[in-house]
Image (tube, rainbow, N blue to C red; front, side, top):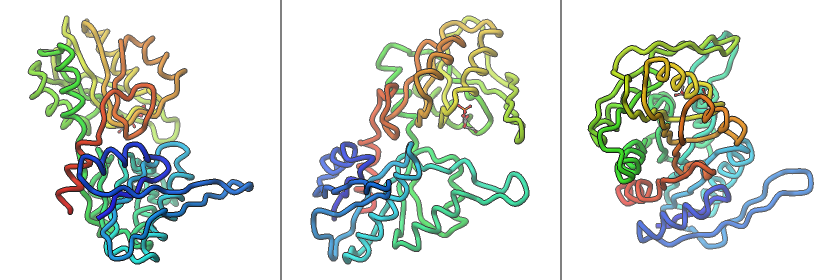
Length: 292
Ligand code: R5P
């Protein structure tokens, strides 16, 4: 069994290989002058079960193409089984047809991976885990909420309350509250599919005077966490922090998040960025070992 380090996640893959005790395969990667991607496995994979670690954070399209090419390389080089380890799975939020004549982007991507020989996936806090069943692909969907909450606990946040910015994130807030011990709350969120405008109401939880951590799977533009922080401030909350698995925002949007009253955002390295304080390497290694 081998761990292949895709160009987007070479360091993470090396750590996963180390923690799971498997050999690591480096990938040679470059771009042709016209922008097309090139990858090559630097070791033989014939007869081996391989774990291709490649996150698909921006530039998503390039990282996805590299993943497709790596799957093809492994398949045609005779790997006995291919598991795609994709810590951040791009396009996962277009998980249904919201408006007539749209694609279901995540289904299209999973179908392509299946066609290229990927039999299973390991991912982290994917937006809608049910999409895997719809395309008949087995998937281990890990949750990073435990390691995020533990990070705050280690910093002295025992008793802080966990809040979810929408119904879907309640599971995260509930799980975090078991570690932090300060209860949880959540907001009802509505997004206008055409204008993108989001509105929020506090549905459950006591915010007044409390130290709060907002938990979400993803922060992209930062609009959701900003609105949650502003609503919490309106409710008289004390210090506000935010934690997410996947942090996609740039510095400018980060500053806007801070201006809304959030003291700090902590994220994992599914997307290696300036807010990454927690590594998913241990979680991924456990999942790799369980599939070995
Ligand atoms: C939505 O359902 C997700 O869980 C996130 O709350 C959302 O994708 C965050 O996006 P943004 O940061 O752009 O508001």
